[in-house]
Each structure stands twice: as structure tokens, then as C-alpha cells.
View 1 (cartoon, one colour):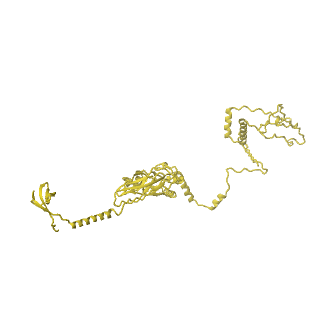
View 2: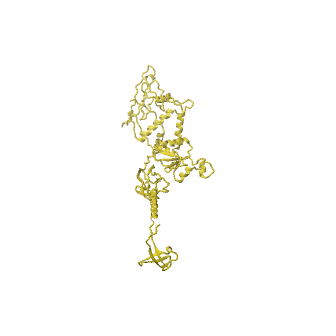
View 3: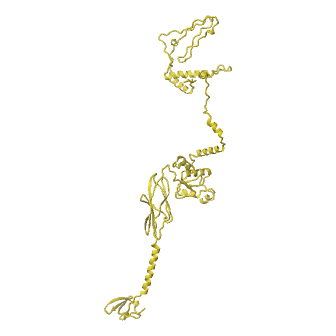
Amino acid sequence: MKRSQDSYTFTVGKLDAGMAILIGERAHLIEFPSVLLPPGSTTGSIVNIAVHQNLSEERKRDQQFWQLQHDIFETFGCSSPEPPHLEVRNVTQTSVTLEWPPVKLATAKLRSLDIYKNSQRVAAIPSPLTNTSTKLSGLSLDTPYTFQLVLRTSAGTFHSNIVSIRTHTIADTSGISVCFGTVADPILLEDAKSALREMKAKWSDKIQIDTTHFVCTTPAMTPSGAQASGGSVAGGPGVEYQKALQLSIPVVQPQWILACLTEKKMVPIVAYYLGVTPPNAASYYSQRTQSMSQASLPSSGSASSAHKSAPNRSSMPVPSRGTDGTPPQRKSIEPTPEDPEAETEATQQSKRSASITETRHRSNGTMDRNFKFPQSQQQPLQRVASPPSQPSSPPPVPKQQHPHSQKPIPLPSPREGEAGEEMPPVNIITPSSVEVPPPPPVEKETRRQVIVDEEDEDVGETVEIDL
């Protein structure tokens, strides 16, 4: 370094606490570090001070400074944080599951990651650097919602895209996401999976963020279940079963899936919890048994065609009619000689029908259309004259018929008399000359008893009339 010709002369005026007061030629006072004075300088000493510029050091310093600025730009100025891309994973009647890729912060520092519902902050996402999904519950049925993520970093605030969804109705079962545990019946398991496929639902063997139900018939899982429960007994609770309990996921039986498919809507899970007998268990196993039995039986085309062409069966045979179109008559049962005192079935039936008919007329106040009131002048009953050839036998007296009976009085035919003898004239009694006594009064108790007997007894023989 070249020494400059210009220098300045100063006189040391005072030395105090490492500082020296220098007095210049023009009475200039400056403070100068005492350590920079020549050794042995004291008060009154005269020193020359020269100042020079170091250009090489300045260039070196500038070069280092700009290199540092370039490194900072390459490290922190080329990339910036990216806003998250929000997506819908699953939607149910009361919840929605959202997911997004890992956040890209570049060189910025994360401050918070918040979820917004309908432009209002709901909560902060826990562990935002590793967590990439969230599930929001407590939504209303069949209601539209909008969701958005807001990323706050040291480099600024970044908003994600807005996602619009609508919660499902009660008849939409596509939001079901099932995790299958241990199902003892393999046929029941396959039927449940087929029902899920038909409902466009999904299932897995692991608990996920969008799992809505855990389906099993027993919490046991062998052998990993015993290891997960920390015991040595085989058949302990499985790992996924324990996760379902920790996450408050309802544990139901496979019959719940079949019920949702049958009802075509979301069925309440109260009757299908683990340990409760499902209401549709008996019908399911009976239908499966019938289907298995029908599959095992051989099918024949002739039997099916004969069954289709067979006429309808009746519980009773069709009664036969006479050639003249008269209704069929019942055969009377004659009493056996071993029991002469017993009444025949036809006699008992006729008595019951007569008593029921009389009771009906009395109780209902109805009359037979053939009944006629007697005349005001009562005529004595006339008897039919008997033939003179049989004086010993009493003359036949016509039996007084019930006003409701319609059977004609049989008259003796000329063939019944002896041949060659003439029959005397017979007086025929007309119905108007028959005295009909008034019906006796009926008490209430007797009427009630007759009504009960009327309901139990048979009405009697019916007659078919040709149209």
C-alpha cells in the first residue's frame, strides 16, 4: 500500500479511559482511540495521522454481499406456497368427509390451516403437515353446504377451491361405508357384500376416515385378536373392533345391510347392534332354507304344466242335481235297532231349525208371508169323515200345522179304500178357518239364550234356485 504524502499533525491534549483528545493545527478537537497512538505517547506529544482508502477490500466485500443475495433468492425467492386443492371423499345424511393433498409450503413456515363451512370458520385442522383429511358431522338432512380451506404461512395467506355438496336423503344409501370384522357365516357375508354393491355403497377391511359402520357377528379375531387385546386367550377383540370403539363407530350385524336393501332407505341401527337378535334374522334364514331346498329338488316340465292346467280345487264336492232340475235332497238317517230311543240326526236338525226360525220371528218381529189372520167369526174345527167300512178306527184328525210351515195336508187317495166301495165326500179345511193362537211372551233371558244358540246352531238346509 502506497503511503500518502498528505498527513495531519495533532498534539495529544489529554488521555482518559482509552480515549485521547487530539488538538489540530486549526484548533480542531477530535477523539481518537489511545490504542492507535504510537507507543510512549503522552500528553503534549505531537503525532502525524494519515488516512488511505482500501479499494481491493471494498471489491471483495461487494462480491461477497451479492453472492449472499443470490443465494437467498435461489433459496427463498423461486417458489412460494401453493393453495390446497379440496376434494369430497364421502357424503352421508349427516356428515361429509373431505380430503386434500399434502400442503406445499416451499420455504415458508406454516402458521395455521383452517376449515370453513358456508364462509364461516369451523375449526383448525390438527397436525396440518401430516393430516390430509377431515370428517365433519352434525349436518342437516338434505341440505346444501360449501367448504373451503384457508392456509396461513409466513409467506402469506392462501385459499383453496370452494366445494359445494348436498347431504343425502333418508332413501339414499350410497353413502354407507362399512368395515367388515369377523362374520361367522360366510354366506351371510357374501349376501351383505352383494347388497352393498347393489346400493352402490363401499366396504373395506380396515377402519378409514369415512367408515360409517363396523359390521361383524362377534368381536373376536383369531389369532391377532388375542394379541391386540393384550391377553393370551384366543378369540379376543380384534384390532379393528377396538378402533371402532375408540372412534365411536357403531358396531352392527350384517342383517342391518340386508334391511337397508329391503326397505330401500336408511334403517335405524338400534335393533341391529351386536348382541341383539335382529328382527329380520328368522325371515332371512327361512328364505335361505327355502331357496336351498328348491334348488335341491328336480324340476320337471310335465309337473309344472299339469299344475298350471289343473282346475281350481274346492273344499266340498259339487252336489248332484236331478234330471228334472230339482235341488238335491239330504238322505235321512234312520235309527239303528240297537238304540231305538235315540233321535236321528235329521230329526234333531229339523227341531233345531224350527226353533231357530221361530226364535228369529219372535225376536225380529217378522212374519211369514203366507200367514193370514183368522176371521172375526171363529168356526169350529171340522173333522174329516172316516169311511163307513172301518167304524172301529177313529176318524183321522188333520194335524194343526205351524203357520210358518208350507207342507200341504196329505189327502187319502181312492186306492187306499177297499175296491168297489165308494168314498164319502171329504171336507177340506182351508187355512183361513184354522185358529192360530197368539205367540207366548218371551223373556229377556230366554231371548239371549236363543240368540247365543242361534249363532252356534246350524241354519239348516239350503235350497238352490235355478235362474
